[in-house]
Length: 239
Length: 210
Image (cartoon, rainbow over all chains, first blue to last red; front, side):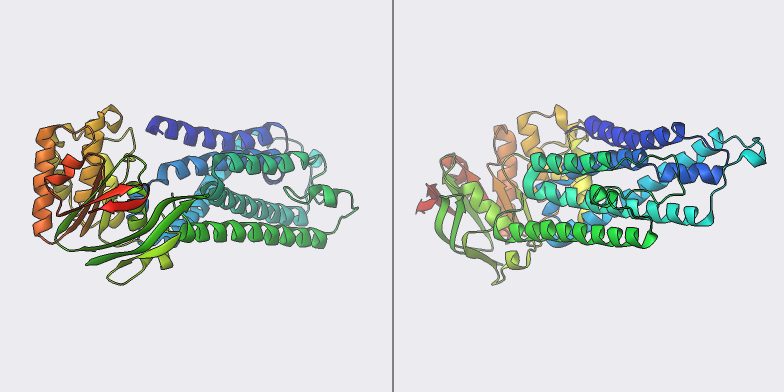
């Protein structure tokens, strides 16, 4: 893959991430900066595009470093994979910060600070707390998914990885919540959405339980694929 | 260092591509692996490097099986099949990038390796613009630049002109005298006859004769 292709793909990945923020920004309008941020960070289109972008970046970097000259210069294959996983976590954090800055600047630009105080939508403190919880959770889930995708790519190649990615995106897509009332507890992105959607849940504790089960399942999937990769490298081949 | 290849077999799906290979390789020798395309030479080299695991048997370096703990043999460098480099970086930048992983050598040593393979004048040219022979030379340069103890070269002279082949051969012979282990595969027997201390002829995944 040429450097130009790599840079283009990385750029497209970044643009996809920023596009999500842009859609979130223009699809909502608020008179309060924090309210605007709250809506945007709980907007599933924001996370949907962020996920598309990060996977593009991860797979591009994977192609770049899937190289026997580089691998053989590492002392241990397991350590090499672990280092790459740490790098994926760093990339996720870095990219999220870039997108967050974009969102802050965008929110400052579109927020109408001159609006009458009485017509302002006032959000309660738990809503902000929920926004924080939602953002951290989504970032963690996407980070875990991007690691799964990286390990999956090593194990099964491009085709299976694309199918897995597509399935994740579909799950994301069907979970698009209506963002009209932000003070409600939003739907949970990615896994289990439909399952919980049919339940009349309003409690935060139920969402915590769902989040924990999401993490457990993703961790289980990640452990299986990681174990497969390490075992395959020991028993069959690395490249 | 002593490399012991003990009863090594390798199976892909249901086919054995290597059957019961036994070799003992020691310091100060150049070993040649010859045979038709697909006779199992490259697979054996990948097994020695640790990129493939043998289905049966083991490869021991001074009695240690590195593959068991998923480690790579330190001080081993390899050129396997066609070399993989980054097309839009220059030859020099590619080597620099690889050298930075272990950070053991200076720019001077990178340039020296390029000089040995007669690529110094084209060091700033992009890899994508290299001819087949130049790509091969860069592959050899990445093997020799860190002065490893074990050098593995799979069909190293493909597309390289005679003058450079002579220069590289001389360099490899000098390294042999220094006590390095060099393993070279080639489907052209004459390539190996000039320099190898021992040649193993492969046929259908087996050593037919030495």
